[in-house]
Length: 426
Image 1 (cartoon, rainbow, N blue to C red):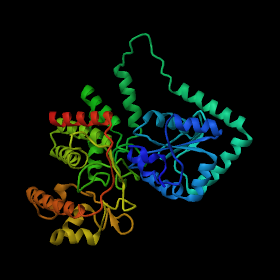
Image 2 (cartoon, one colour):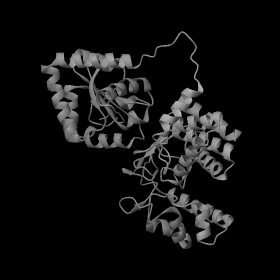
Image 3 (cartoon, rainbow, N blue to C red):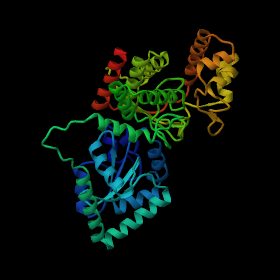
Image 4 (cartoon, rainbow, N blue to C red):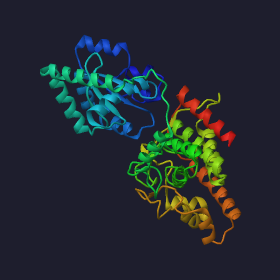
């Protein structure tokens, strides 16, 4: 039997419409039920292309025993963070205050009026079951403690979100910008681009600041770091080497292993950056990446009405990255006589090795070096790559595709329109 979410439009909510959990969508019906039954609330927040959201759904929300615990002791609310960014923002602030970090899936416990008192991100089934039992017990026996915690968290969130506006005009001086650059520079990964550590996100807003800083003051290291980062991203597994487009982030510090979901807002911002990099450098590499990303957007993320969809899932057939990865045998059989040569180009069987004998395609070496090593002209290599990518795309098109989140969000569409404008200008 489907639950209430069967009447929703969000692909993420519809994914949970057949869970045994008695989910509510966010709204007055859920709050009225919590007040009437005097039960704490669970706000479980995610989005359709989130890998760990799928994992927790399969492990916990599809489990009859866990669902019975949730239904008996809580009013359970499912939220699509892309559909309700305001709700996500509130409960993300709460979890970040409690733990210093956050992420999705976001699972937050609250009083019947919605004030949060505890939460976290992904929980393993045993952890989740214990947490449900303990919070239900505390709600019955130590309600005043939870009330105090909720008041403290709510007060902290209110203070955190207050921005005092000066009566005077605020003028940002060059010294302020220099200081901002200096602080960022301390965290530059000068080998792999981006910021040090992992997981590694492209952080396009930071890269855009660095480009503007270079354009304003001509400081070459700022430009060099942007170009290094964009080049490394485009040559890594975070970039779909076959179909174009970028995943959200890589789990390592070398841009190799992504969580394979592709988001419209990431690709929109990166298109703008690659176009700007081409404007500044006239390097054809950045032009090629811009064009390939826009071709991916045209083919896979654009509706018949010429507006843009939100995201592509990381999983297909219940397995993360299955659509995008290759065994050595699949790769070489697809490319025939060129298989071994192109395996070296894309790191298949070497740098691209991942798990379950599958490979993430990436570009371990510069094209000119590869061409030189194999006595190919630039034109010969380009023709070979175009032919090979055509064969790989054809083979991949026969696989079961990742699910599409076909929501059309105004803000993300605006970002993509801006990206097209940047690309046209470049």
